[in-house]
Length: 340
Ligand SMILES: NC(=O)c1ccc[n+]([C@@H]2O[C@H](COP(=O)([O-])OP(=O)(O)OC[C@H]3O[C@@H](n4cnc5c(N)ncnc54)[C@H](OP(=O)(O)O)[C@@H]3O)[C@@H](O)[C@H]2O)c1
Image (cartoon, rainbow, N blue to C red; front, side, top):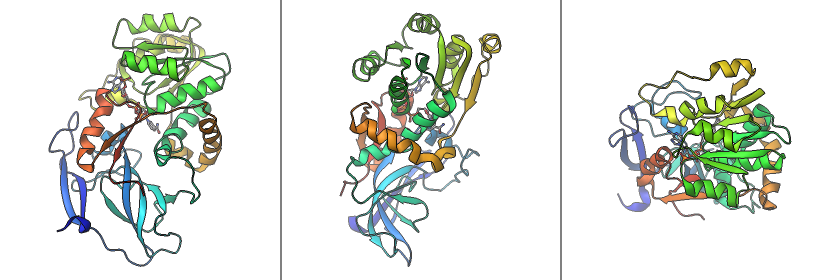
């Protein structure tokens, strides 16, 4: 097959045990599909790598139907319409959806949303701030965490895609913001560039002591992206009527035997802490409420973001691995093909 007619995909070959290893995903090749009436052919440009990809690859029931062996790996994408036989789409339209770990996908239009044709934001913004990352940070913090001005908000994975936005939104709400991250560089970035009040490198020293030092008035909202020991340490610092927002548990996604023991549950009881989990999909119908302020803050320079872009679909498993070893610098994306 010559290049113009070939599609490439990553398919599930074996359900990963622990971290995703060589052989769990299979590189495959097939002809670029033909479209029928009321269909479009999408060429994927960006693939979003998300910690939840590990859960999707597990073959287990999650908040989405489980994938089967042989399925194309699920993934959120932004792409361009290359061919259309659909009345609502033109060639060159940019669409977002979950077209998976592949170069070309066929859609009937029901599973993609079209970007405004007069769009003036960089396409990358839609894979982060003006996309599901933005919705996660906005609704997770404001709807679930409900911070008030003057309160202390503590965030884990604070230099990551979601965490870095949560901290900036909390600053806009007038909160004191402390981030937990896994390197000195990440700690410097969230304080010096994003304006967090303090940062803690969880890989150096006693975390509980560092939290007490950085949060002298205790913690009112803990926005949890990681779970495990960091959740336990944060739990011990919560104030009366504190809130824990369970956004993600990345420390547990690869774990053969997840951590179940928490040493600070008595503190949790005494302080009447509310702990609530959420999934961003629950907020899709309210997306417009978040996109308006997020777009404005972005355009005013009140929120910043960074993207870490790896190139080439063949590197998708390596890009996913970066989320789990912490080497991603902000929102992890993969450039599958060139922007139009
Ligand atoms: N509830 C929802 O709807 C929803 C939606 C989107 C995302 N999420 C969750 O939000 C969290 C962050 O996602 P993201 O896309 O923004 O990723 P991210 O924060 O950009 O990247 C993941 C980060 O997690 C940290 N990490 C990895 N393994 C860790 C471990 N064992 N212990 C502590 N930290 C670890 C690393 O940062 P360090 O270098 O700081 O360790 C890594 O950079 C994830 O848990 C994800 O599942 C939830």
